[in-house]
Picture 1 (tube, rainbow, N blue to C red):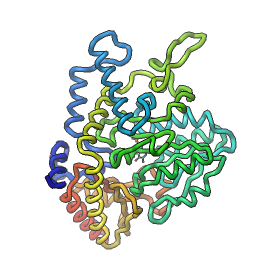
Picture 2 (picture 1 turned 90 degrees about the vertical axis):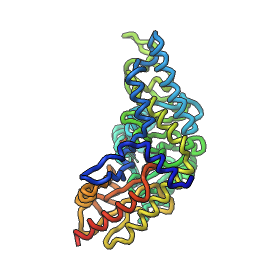
Picture 3 (picture 1 turned 30 degrees about the vertical axis):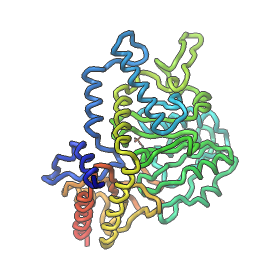
Picture 4 (picture 1 turned 60 degrees about the vertical axis):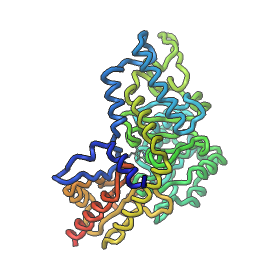
Length: 408
Ligand code: PMP
């Protein structure tokens, strides 16, 4: 089967793509914001809600036991998916943002001292900036950001120059949600470890693009959201090395995260349960397991090749349109294409594309420091996933050309 007909079968698993928007076939190019959900994931959450709903860990009945087994199997599936040493290193949270807040709250607030530094990069999402600022401010530590080069690559010389024994934490995205730049995480981790810093990887964009191996990277923490990996909203993961999670105090208090509660003294559960206070998103975790199975059924070799071909075709098409400037031309890029049209506001371009049934994102993409770095207020961003095809790319390029002409 050719690559194209294989991916037409994949596309058929996404019923959302059969709808019309403004009377046109819907072209969904906003997967960096959230992915559409395949039938298998929708069915899994439907069946859970219909037949399997029960709370986990405390039930004294068969269906509750089943829910607990399925919830813990989902944890195991995540551990295997990112090659964690054990499922105890997997904490279920709401998403990337909560995962980073957990690490900043429980890890950073405990280790940071006055004068210490947290090193980020200029391409971070606000979700990987603000939690560190909150912790650093409280501890009188400093937040620094390594520079981004004009082509959107990380300035590794600046990164190295800003690393020092004062650096206690490095938090960096594996793939920029604006530039598409894929960072060299192995090198970043090696350099950071040399000065004794721990590294958190924001994997929000990378998890749907390539196999993540936390042991190969040797990162200390990693965060991602299920909803960018074909799973529902409200489920995400914080991975942490067991020896670090073990040292960390609770993030939130409540049921499930304790071993014993009394008014005199409360003792806390082991990890990962210590960080999962209250009833977790059981259905979300189980659906995330189904989403991982969906990704595995295709395999990252095929996924990468397909997205690369789409990105390449879209980049070529957009590059030929006058007065369009691509923001982010790194050698190693994920399937994300950001651009500005000279003389036109990004929101206007977004609206014009929407009228053509084409869904993109327009704005600062929660990366205001990066916008400042490029001297712009926002971009139009198209992002591609397994369900897109060359027809989508053609429609998109045609629509951008038409929009650009309106502003000349
Ligand atoms: N980091 C990156 C690189 C992202 O793209 C996003 C989502 N746009 C986030 C963090 C935050 O993810 P969430 O909103 O799912 O918590």
